Image 1 (cartoon, rainbow, N blue to C red):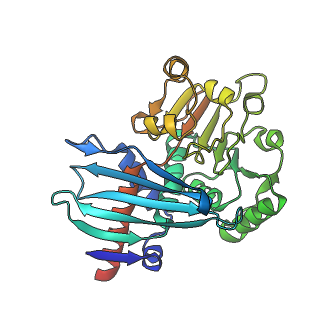
Image 2: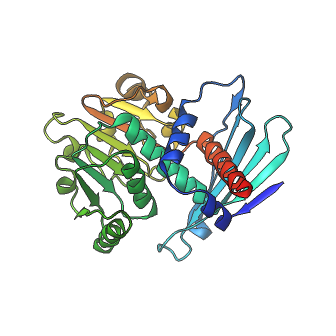
Image 3: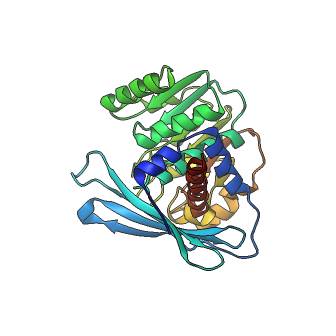
Length: 319
């Protein structure tokens, strides 16, 4: 059995175009003769001020199947969150445990960022004038890194609630990517003339609202990629905005209904108004109007990033 610790995993896997490609390939993989993806298990742990999430995926066409556990806690009651977790890989034919990737949630962060990059590459126009990152934390930074792997917007903005957080984000972007970020604490100013908006927050109340996004009409084509809502408590988009989308795409429709931005919306509205489409069934290219892509995080990507990690470690060992 293979056991890899976090430093080994970080040495083997970083966010690159190759990782974005692998996550896209996982989304586009066809249906297997047998596959199984149970509902997400979430343990809300009040004493730890956080949750533990368990996701799993089996495909008869893959060498392994995965059980991923990832926790996110704020032990000091609201400071910087701590992540913990591991990915366990089992042989698809024998069921035997093959590898334990004790990554402390690192691979989840990478595959989440890469999924956002893939969604941008698939759904956004080739030329982006204004892109907005909503949020200033770790995943917001990773979403910016993923965006820059697939597009080079003329202007990049960050919308956040904390002046210190915005400054930290802008300083990091300048040091890491050598780009200037325009910072905003006001939603209307941040979203003005924006072509692409990526939300990456842990908010429990909407950060984007219909009145701001749509204004007096839908004249401007716009893509929103919502990354943050992955539990029953979180929400980034106002329900009125969700109901006004011209095209609704999600990585997993059932998860969007229970954990993502579709939770709480009536079945009739979902069937008649929203008509969600799975990301794996969407063709490449931007469309007119407002497109919203809700990414809640799927276990098939946990399998894909885990197998990618094993392959990278094997390559390093051979070298």
